[in-house]
Image (tube, rainbow, N blue to C red; front, side, top):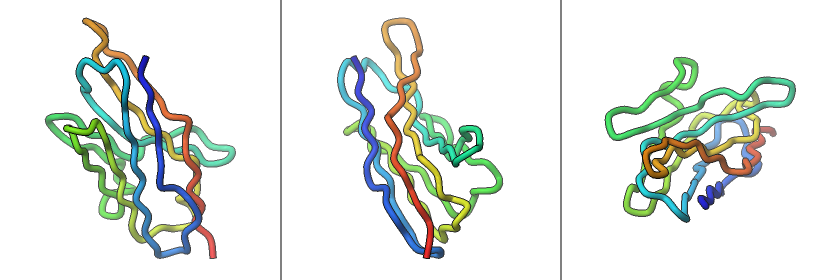
Length: 118
C-alpha cells in the first residue's frame, strides 16, 4: 500500500507565492517519477510539472513561474509557485509513479486546494 499526501495549499493573493509538498510512503520499492497536476472547476485535469531521474517537464504556459524539485531521500516532491494568478486556482494533485515488482504503477494524492484571490 502506498500513501501520497499533499500539503501547503490555501488562499494566496495574486502575485504571491506558495509551496506545495507531497510525501509518498508505504510499500515503495522505487520511485520512477513524481509530479503535480491540477484541475480547475469545469476543466480537465492538466499537468503542472513532473520530474524523474533524467529531466523535469512543464507545460509552456507555466515555465518560469512554477518549479518542481525532489528530496529523493524522503520520497518527497515540492512545487514552488510564484507570481500566482487567479487562473491558477485549482485542486492540485500529486502523482507518484513507482515500481511495484516489475510493474510501474500510478499513485495519486487526494488533492489540495489552491485559491488565488484578493
